[in-house]
Length: 451
Image (cartoon, rainbow, N blue to C red; front, side):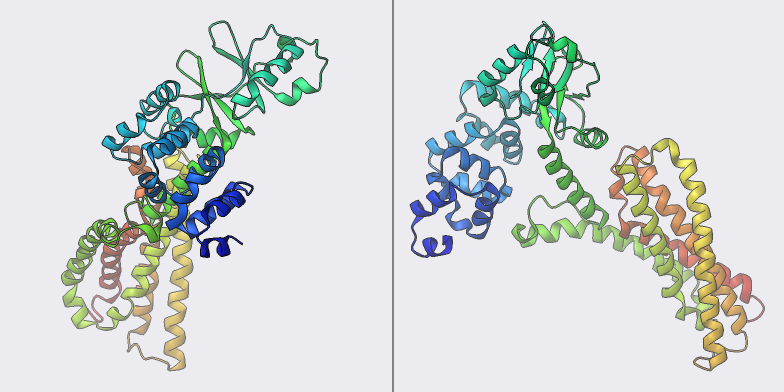
């Protein structure tokens, strides 16, 4: 039906239909037909328009704003919850942010400027000021009457917050507790003081961890003196967690973070985002070439060694990538902290040694099998070649596991993002060391025989 109306260019009919649909469905229509998004936004009911707008990708949001008349921009920005408005504004150039703020009414402008004043990626930018707070001296009936009066102005009423005369948070109670007791019950009789709160300067990462540990649909936000400033809802935390997950995946892949959907990123920007890391990794791989040149004499004497270079070196890179991925994830979930480095190192050393012996045994058996079945002739010293491959695999896998597990911890200790210790970076690091380990093993086993 939407497609037929679009074919007839009947925007009014489309808007009337979209006003009665879920905002996720409306957003999907906008993503499918972005050329009509601004025109439809003009005609939607303002609440539906704002609810849909906050779900859209930033590039489409920008395009819509450019095509809207000033009056509609003002309506849209003032209707957006303050945290969603801030999330949109912080993606714009500073000069344009100042222009957008002019459209806000005095109260919304004050809330927006205050939120933008908090550090980027902090809880202060996520919180919303719309909540219901009460006093501990009230009765349940007074609370219910207050909710009926003020609930329409609050985005979330599932949890009610108790504050003292100075507006300091002293507890929170789920609304169901008020519905299940006698209306004459005092609020103080329902309090247990076991509330969980966020600091306004907590990072988004810390907020995600606190939500993970507590079964809450929202958490209160306080300052250093415990004054209640706002709340953070679970849906906003889920959105942030998804954004952070996408960023970490891109970093671990060895590239800069894309701030737009893949298909919306301009070609030159996509190349630029990927080229930096590739150049760095390429320079790192040059060290592999240098190591190969250093052992070129050995290669000239025993060409059979060249056959196993990809096998042994890639095994180290694979084991290092495994270890790095496991530790980065464990650190993100707070299963591993900086103080656990010694336990991690001992554990990964043992694991690397075991994995190395497993792969070494497989490599050893492979050479024996090929030699005995006549599939390939490794020469008269084939057994020494087998020992070279086996023991070098033990050393390379051990080094890969060790470096892959320790690198994220070292980067975190230096104040960086562990996700920056990308899989390609670990693989490059292991490649260089792998060449050295492989040829050192060859000198040990083949010296006096083939070398």
